[in-house]
Each structure stands twice: as C-alpha cells, then as structure tokens.
Image 1 (tube, rainbow, N blue to C red):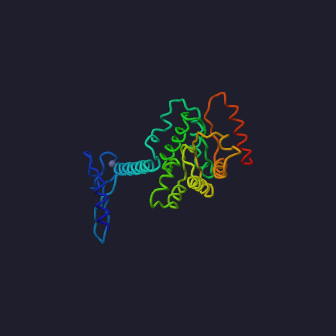
Image 2 (cartoon, rainbow, N blue to C red; image 1 turned 60 degrees about the vertical axis):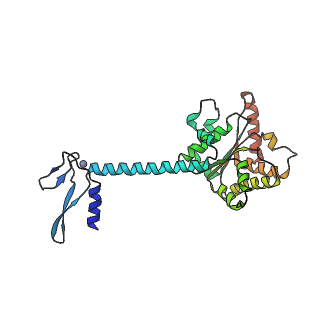
Length: 274
Ligand SMILES: [Zn+2]
C-alpha cells in the first residue's frame, strides 16, 4: 500500500536541474526549496519516501483544474447538441448581438436571475411580428444558461408533434422528457397544425410544466388580441390562458406602440389577478 502511494507520488514528481541534497542527505527541489523525499522509520528500519514539493503540488492542482474545465466543456457541448434542435439556434448568443435588439437586457436579466426565475416559475412570452428578433432573444437565454451547465430545451411544437406522431412513439415518455427540463423554450408558437390531437398535446406539455412549477419561454407572432379573442375555441383558450399565467409578456414592436405595450401589460396583470 505504502509502496503504491510512493510510486504515485514519484510519478507526479518533476526533476529540476537545480535539485540538490540537503544537510540530512535528502533531495530538495532546486526551485521552491521544499523536500522531494522524507525519511521514515518503518518496522525498525529507516526508509526514504518521495513527497511532492510545492511546484509539484501546484502543477497537479493546475492539471486537475484543466480536467474539470474540459469535463465542463464536454457537458456544455452535449447540452447544446441535445437542447438546441436547430443549427441556427447556436448562433443566437448575446455576443452576436449587433446592438439592434432593444429587449436583450430583459433576456440578460433572466439569465442573471435564473435561480429566482426558476423558483418562482417565471417565464416570458416574447411577442411581435416576424423578423423582430424574438427568437434571437430566446436563443441568447438558452445558450447562456447552457454555458453555465444548465439543461435547456429549445424547440417548437411542429417538431414535438412530429416526434409524437412517429410510429411507435411513446407519447408519455416524450412529454415527460419535455417536462423534465429546468427550462423549456418553445419557438414560434402558433405555426403548428391545429388538429385536436395537436392542441391536446400542446396543452399537456404546457399544463404539466405549470403543475410541476417549471418555467416556459415562448416566442410567437400571435398578438395579445389573437390570444384573447372572444370567439376562440376552448382548446386554444385554455392553452393561452395557462401561458399567460406562466409567462411575463415581452413585446417586440415599433416605438410608436410603446404606450400600447404598457396598456397591454396592465391588462395582462389584471387577467392574472395581480
Ligand atoms: Zn519545487
């Protein structure tokens, strides 16, 4: 046992040109001056055992740190390869913002306060016309959280519905998988097909996250008016009302519409009884 430890120590020792023998005849490091071996009395006999000097210990610590970093990088890249379901999502990072995305501070806040958001089950509903940067907004959050080692799934309902309708698909397992992510991001809500089955599945995912208190971020071209129309069928109504309960509105639109945005937020709050 002792011998094995000694071998291991020896393996981690580095010899330096200036290493020398001290007055007791023991090897010392020529750089830090610490001993590289010690004398022990073992079963009545003196024996030499190697030990690590400061340089060796520092080098080992650095190696361990590098190993930890490498492992973490592997974890992040595997989180991304699973959680970013489209290649373009990878490009949507805060670093790639050209300054034209006015709402990114709200996205940064989400990342910075993630623990709080998670505990309180707060999500965002990012609304606005096509091409305003809503998906970029959501992608920045996804990438930044994954880079901290947090597991996020960013996908859309068309893709989910494709999975669910595959031959032999285990619907419960797929939905349980989606519910298990600390954060689920649904890009482009409203473009998926509207069959009874689709709406049922969408409601299942949303409602199960709601019941297990797990946040959702949704981007959509649908407007507040679209989601609160009086003539909506009950299937859509219950999906939208759940989402409005779970998500805080983030509205992408022109400057002239800021006042409207304030009014909408007030209405949204009232709807939730705050
Ligand atoms: Zn040394």
